[in-house]
Structures are given as structure tokens and as C-alpha cells.
Length: 297
Image (cartoon, rainbow, N blue to C red; front, side, top):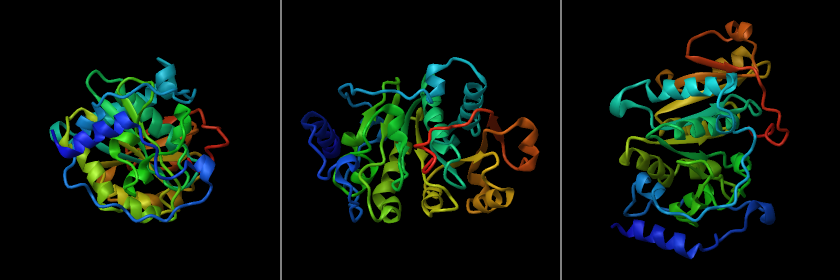
């Protein structure tokens, strides 16, 4: 048993408090240098398999694939899952999946959460959903949790990996919140510690998938950085929000081979031709109207 694995077990038992206050109580952003990568790293599968005490969660009704067995939106998410899991057979199957959009308010967090939950519903697959939006992370609200400790605390070396991974109340779906707000999100996202976190997914069982929700591609640099570490990108587009030229500019920032699919939110089927069909497209007619999400989704 590695020293890191033993440390993760101890952290779970001790349940030590993070060194920084949660953003709900702190209010001030922190400037943090990315912490060095641990000398020995437990595989992601080992960390996810660690026993954890149950946490009080309040699942959002927008976790549609969990609350609904059928419906158009649910079927589109399932199609997206099937496309990703079977796009390349064997070891080439995308295991680290980045979800982004061109602008804020397009519904990427909705897609991220439901895609991860859908993957976890597979017979063998498990999923880790990570809120990599260190600027305006809101995925924790899907589970009625606080945003810290989370990813930023782990990347800054203030929390161990085992202490920021949380149970969601959905079988085989674990979650890492965005963490305490920081003044240097780009530096943390581009750190060796972040790369090591993603690499651990490939070192574990083939049935473990990591879904990353990140910032908008036209507004920030993080999606391009993370795309270099991820196996593929799912791009979310909201009808009548992102013009075709803006979508084209955002997509051109990524290697074409990295784009797994476009997901069209709140779009009538007859309008899909406005965007073209260069990539696989999945659409749903309902829109994500949570006002709290519009500024950062």
C-alpha cells in the first residue's frame, strides 16, 4: 500500500478541516501557488474505491437522467453517453471528457452533471464529476453541497485528493467541487498537479470516467489548457445565444480530433442547419432556466 494511499485513508478518518474558509463565509479570494505533485500517487480507481461516510445531499431536479427514466432530454444524454463510450474501442475510448461552451449561460453545467450521472448508470462504468470552473463554479448546487473544499484546494496543496472527493447520493457517481475562490485559476489549472489528477484516471480501471466542467472557451484560457490534457471535448451551444461565427471561433481553438460532439440546448430541430453538421450533434428542446446558473454555466 502506497504512502499516498495511506495518507488518503487517514485524511478520511480524521476529516480535517481545510486550511481556508469556504467561499460562503470567507468572501476574499486567495492567491495560491500550485502545490508540487506528490512523489507517489494512488490510482484514481483506488481513491474512488475508498469507503466514505454518507453526506447529506439535496439532488437538483435538473439531474434529469437520475429522476426520469425516459423523455427527450434523457434520451439525448444517453445517446451522447453511448457515442462517447463507443466512439473508439478498447484503450482509445475517451476517459477524460471536457465539457465547455463558447459563452456563459449555455447550459454546460447541466450537460456535465447529467452526462456524468448517465455514465454512472452503466453496468460497469463509474464516473467522477469535477467542477474545473475555478472562477464561477456552481456544480455543487446540483447536489446541495458547499463549494469547498474542492479542486482549487487540492491544486494549491491545502487538501488531499481523498478529502475533496464527495459522494453524491447517486450510485457510482463521485464529485469534486470547484473549491475556495482563487486569484490565479489559470496557474492552478495548468499545474503539474492538475495533469497528474487527470493522468490517474488512465492508470486505473478502464470503466472509470472523469467529466470536467470548465469555463467558457471564448472568455477564458482554461478550456484550451484542459483540452490538451483531456481525451475529448463536448461543446454545448445554446440556441439564439451564440452566433455561428462565435461558435466557429470557439471550436477552432481546439484540435478538431478532440471534439467529440456538439450539444444544442433549447434549439428547435429545424434550426440545427444554422450551425452546420461538422460534428456529431445532440439537441434538446428544454432550456436550463436557473437564474443562479446563467452567469457561469
